[in-house]
Each structure stands twice: as structure tokens, then as C-alpha cells.
Image (cartoon, rainbow, N blue to C red; front, side, top):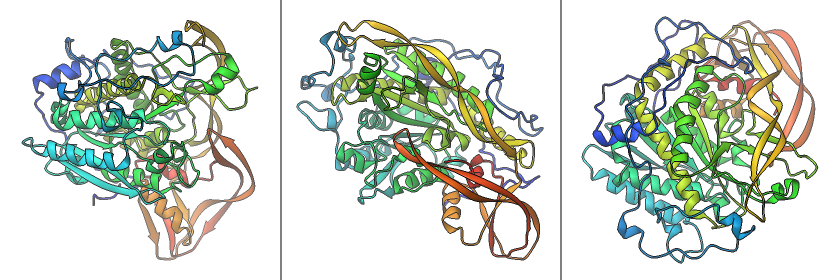
Length: 566
């Protein structure tokens, strides 16, 4: 097991991933070059709340003006070998819109062939097939000199299905300590948190094969990759969004009430990925047709972490090093993109909102763990197998771009993590922490499709922008958090998040704020129940042994112990 994330007492040293001088193979140079964009001078947005800390003397941020690699003509997506693309796929099922709309989404030139995409197949890849696929790729990868691969059992679903991850690396072994010591940043790829969103899972099987034995294998000279193709096996088996218990696991990454979310938290804590990709699909028709008389156009909706208290340099890296090259890679394949957005199920509510600002989704929680955290959504919910090759191709192209960007930015990323860790730790006891933030209301012209003619239809909508957050509630940032001796569940969950929690065994005194819940109201948001609580602060001194004490760790999730809404 790796050493726990250190509690960042003032003056304590932070562990830094060692950097190595790694040779870049020619194929990897081409792959990286295809996603290169020059970084313009960075001017932080005044609308986004943030705390600016002075640059630590011992650690400097990566340069924002590093020259890009020379451009090169390169194929930016893996292609299945000839033996895997023989035969034809079954005709698409009847579309929930006109043939003119369907014609806007032709199949790609490459044909992907996973178990769930085989000719004549009517169901997606089963859990048993995923497990066999991962083991086959691990065996294939291990036959390459210097490559290490292993399948990890990271947890079980509520029905007892194994949740597994494939680790691919050129480190000395596949355990977390070896990956961290390798000097290579780790990328975590997660698919199918929502069981009725299959394209991400099928795409990750393709990515696993290409890393193990195909065109992407050279990327392992530069980075480590961990793949969880299906995080919600029960939901996939039932073709439903939620877990067996009815919870949306992608709204459970802070409280960790589901074993599925706990499995991902444990994996993230142990392997400390620098980049996390969450592969989803979004609703194509449904409420958009009812509200706006349109169907959805974009092949991919994209967003990085957008929640309060994120380091601004992390947002800068997500935008400039990842989202921009990703958009360019998709465009080169004739695939359209937009910021991620959604709308409520209330047909009278015409507002469109970007992805949420609450610290409960995988996207936002991984951002608070100081990782570049990216959401990729393809147009797939509610249309079954329609356009499935294009949907998978979109994910494969996007994820390949992320891997290439990471490989290109190894040096900068190895500077970024310790810089951000130190910056966050230095904020303990200083300034204020934002407890509640909200998106900024605006208007936005969104392009949708006429459901009959298939033509673009511009719709001006009320738009909640998550790119500029409004501060709703803030408090003085504490030095640490104190929990009662009975708070065992909270301690367990904080440790799953990588927060170091220490037991206080001797009597002592400290000045603290305690909070008492005074009211609670339940509501629905983004498909899951939320509880909004009001808290009454009390100032008191404490003198109680056998209590739990958490310090301000480099990862910001210690604020999970705050009495924040939700």
C-alpha cells in the first residue's frame, strides 16, 4: 500500500513525484504533436472566485509559454486490425427522428469490434466479456518487453459483481508505489458510471486493446494508464442510469454511500492519477424535443472541473493543455463539440445549465483532488444502438487526444502536481473558503437540429455558466477539522478520499467552531435526491481526548467535513 497523503501541517514537506528524462519514440512524437497548441499568455478570469497564493520558492509552476512540438500529419485514432473489421454490422434500429437527421451522423471510416459491437449483436458487451477482455489485454501487453499489466479487483457492486481495472505501465511493477516512482503521470479512464450509457465502455475496451498491443502502445513510454471500463455493472445489466439501490453514483463521489463510488475513490487514492477522464453519454431527444422542438446535434459535450476552491492553474491546464487539443482532434475527424449542458425534466423550465458546480460528481471531486478532470459525453441516451460506431469513434478520438496531451506534457505535469499541492496546503488558516457557489446566469445561442429537416436550428436560451462562479457563502478557512470519537463513518470516507485523519488520544484545548443542523429540506437535482441543511455555528473551546482530527491536506477534500449544503 502506498504511503497516505501527508497531512499538511505548516512547514511540513510534501512528497514530490520524481521527474525522469524519458526518451520520446518517433511514433509517440507524432501522436503528441497532433494535439499541440501554443499556450497564449494567461489572464485569470475575474469572474471565477479563487484565492491567489504566492509562488512557493521551492516549487515553480510549469511555464505557460513552452513551445509546442512541431506539427506533423498523423492519424489520430486507433484502427482495428483487418481481421477484426470483417463483416457488416446490423442495420441501425429505427431512429426517433427523421432520416434527414440521421444522415447528419454517418458512420466513421473505421469499424470498431468489441464483443458488444460484433456483427449481428443486439446487446452490448457483458460483464463477463469485459473481464475476459481485460485479462486478454493484460496478457498481450505483458508479452512486450518492459511493459507491465495487471487486472485489479477494486470493489464489488451492490449485486456482488466485480468492478475491475486494467493497469498498463512501464514502471517496475503495477502497484501504486511503482507507478508514482516512475516519474510518469498516471491517467485514469472511467466508463459507464451510468448503466444506460454504453459507448464509453465499448470505447475503453478499444483503448485498452490499442494500449496493450496496438497503435497506442508507444504512449506507455511516457505515461501510465489505468482503465475502469464499467464502473456500474448493475446499472449496465439493467440498462438503467442508477445503481441497484437507486442512487446516481456520479452524485456520490463526495459522501461515498455506494460501494461503486467507494471503489473508484479507493483506486484514485492509491494511484493518484494526474488526469481523470469520465466517459458518459447524454440525452438526444426526450425533453429537448418537448421543450424546444429540437433534437441534439453535438457528437461530444465537454467540460472540466467547475466547482469552488479549485486552483486556477489547474483550470488553466485543463483548458489549454487538454480541452483545446481535444476539440481540434474531434474537429479533424468531422465530429462536432460544445460545452456540456443539460436541462431539467420540468417542461416549463427552459433554462439550460452547464455541468453542475456541486462537489459531488466525479468531474468536480477529482478536480478537488488536484487532478485534471475531464468529462466527455456522446449523444447516445435514448437511442439504443443507433450511430453506435460514431459514438464509440468519438470517445476513442477524444480519449486518444487526452493520452497524447498527457504524453506531451510530462515535464509540465510533474511540476504542476507538487506546485498545486503546496499552493493548496499553504492556504490553511488563511483567507476564506467558499462553502457555496452558483453558476452565472447568461444567455447563449445553442445550435440544435430541426427534427424533420435535419437543418441547424439556433436557439437562444437562458444559460447557467459554470465557467464563472458566483460566491454565495464563504467562511474563514480553518487550519483543520475536529470530529467526535463516534464519527467513524466520516473518518472512513475521508480516508478513502486520501485525507489523513489522526486520533487525538490526550486531553488538550483548542478554539473551534461547532455546527448544529437546524433545518433540512429535500429536493431533486440532476436525477438524485439532495438534502439542503441550515447550520447554526457556535464558538467553543474543546478539551476531549479520543477524538478525530484532520489537518489541511494537499487535497482539498477536507472541506468535506465542513457543514456545507448537500
